[in-house]
Length: 125
Length: 110
Image 1: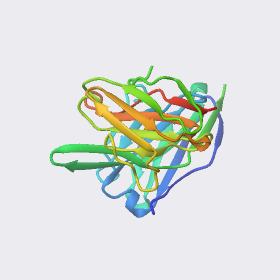
Image 2: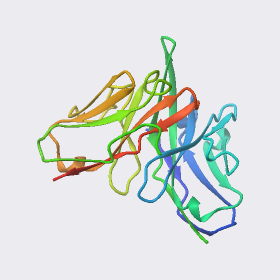
Image 3: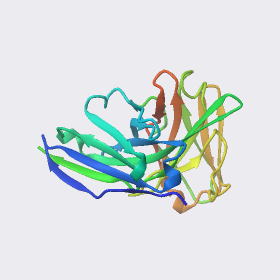
Image 4: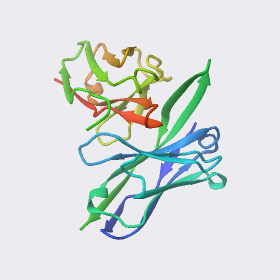
């Protein structure tokens, strides 16, 4: 069974840096992407970005590009979400998810089938 | 403002059948498959429906979904108290080259 284990809750101050992690079992990193999703308190799900651990290609959602860095280390089956300078508005729960892609009859099938339990980040101003 | 549009709330009584709608555009729902996620209170989202209509192993057949044009719908029959959760639709968006979500529908079982 595939699992994604995320690092623990963080309490930081505005301006500080932070890296949170998402460690997967072997099959969660082969032939799939890892996607990060933000959920602000009481709000919905927002796509932040997606990385391919096999070639390190990363695609960012426009609102997040330049503010966060997404990376992955296939050798340790761990993905990361990193901030150089946190803001109070970064207070949220962050989920990593395995993003499956299948091409069947020339159609692309995408789905996030395994999710981590989430990492809550609290940033004080 | 979410790219996909869902009603923010829905409610029903035990045993009832209920439908949650999800509206998008040609670059997402109109040209890609729709997925639905269930988020129980204080837990991570869970894949509930994929490829418009498919249920992952373990998801009760009380949950079903459909898609037509640029809209999709999730149906829950025989509503149960444990179905009280937030439900999110999601689809790949060709313009964005990434996934887009609905704002979520919070279901209350009265």
